Image (cartoon, rainbow, N blue to C red; front, side, top):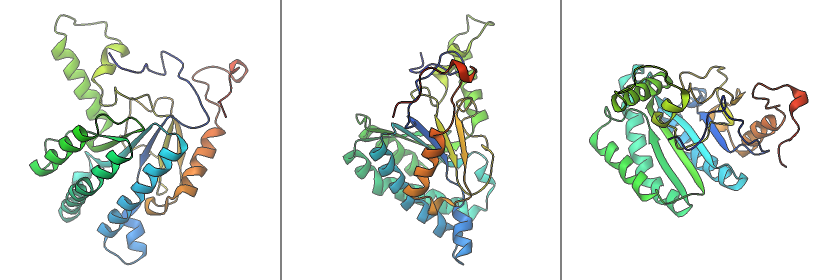
Length: 253
């Protein structure tokens, strides 16, 4: 069974600091273009910013950080850029896993990993295995991931493992097969770069997530900008279908 219940079936706990933050790291290419640099330079800068984000989450008490690194639709980008992104992914895993482990961060990668080169798949497996015992922060990288893919793969796995049942399925039947079954639903979703859409990211899990959109490009999204997102989150009234008058318990300070 899933470790955490759906927000549509059970009221989740609410606190002043989001337990789970999900981020679409948008704007790397535009950041580089503004500086007359190749797009890959923006992606490199974006990886540097990721280190700062992990540190900020650890300092603020965020327990789960999920990052949309490469969508299933990103294969449509120019082949040269895709190749460079894969190389950057390999380099980041080679250089960062040891640091994550030292800081008590558990690494997970979700998505369809089969199209990736064997070396990249091996590094992912090694990184997940090395950090499996860590619990200060769950860092999840969504790579070759799509929300619709996630739901479909969950449905197919559920049906293949429960051939005796042909009808009357429930949310609780499907939830254990979703890629994020190990984590609570995101409290706060952040998208940098100015676009205001979720782009096929965590379609099931974002049902009651607070959405925060900022024009700040990802390489410029520092801790000051992150704190702005958290401040915005603290102003939200998380009703989950209830009225304002029913909200007796306010978020803990």
